[in-house]
Length: 415
Image 1: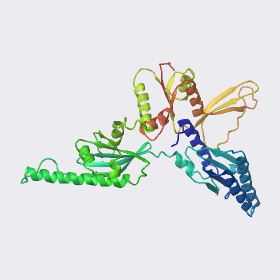
Image 2: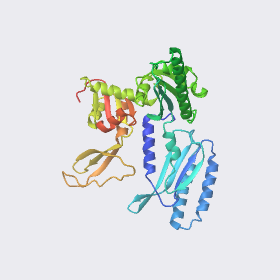
Image 3: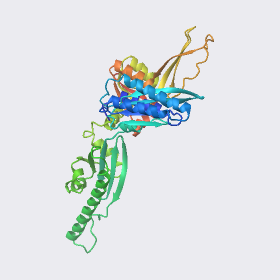
Image 4: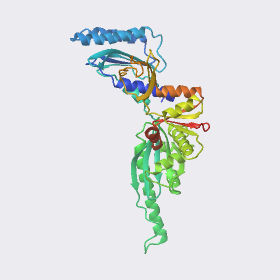
């Protein structure tokens, strides 16, 4: 992911959600991706050619809609002095707004990563895949857990772990059968261990070599001693993968349940990745909850109050939080009502109704994104903002149990 801060990433994702839910007729919606090395004059010439070709469309309505979208794009390009470093993306076209109504959609995005290819795409929906791919967490870590009885191969992709393969060994126990010499028994046992390590190495190599080298940031090996040391030193991994081993870590489990243990044990090694940071923030929150310090707050109203008095040290917001604060006001008597509702892409503001005090029509005076409001309050109070994924248990609890909003406080405010 490019150098987008977490709030910018949130806003970007929300824009994509909005665009994803827009649709038009036939091939009237145009998506235009322009890389930084593309000449603006070349793009303009191409759009003029498309405009001329659109004159051949039989349906007058479709022809007018397509040419209208192209005119809009050409007008925007006239004011573009240079293409930004990451390129620029335009979306234009007549979209359906419901109840047989339509409107012209015009959206301009500066992507978080460079646009690689020039793309002109027309369809009944906007073409968003290149931008969605930019938001995908690409950092991948190979995970190997082993002892002399079993092994589990997996991956940490972004914030999620996945099991690739589970293996069982045929290594005999340390008690030899009657009639076998101790030397012979130990020799057979070492051969079986070697063969098991080779199976683990082959399975890990097969799984990890399929990952793009730039995406595979490293490999973590966990388990019991001396198995993990013998495996690492024995050259059982492909030589390209061996160079990516970040460290060996003691874990009590070598099945799937050991992955969390391995990631936690490798905390200092992985301290730069978001998952570790988010886990630590949630652990601190739950730790404070378990004490009587009073240095935690949760729920929209309580956290807002603590933000307003600048008592918040860390603001915890779920990445899945999609809410907005709506304000209704009567211009006659001054009655005001505020409430929070779940945000939905392209949802229209409902009818305000009449004032319960004087009966005059109410007006929507403000609709504020909750994440934007809380982020601004956090900045004013010098609070750190932590966006928490729901891809791990504690992150899911933040969204489900606490409504996606919580805070670690500087002191007990009594709120």
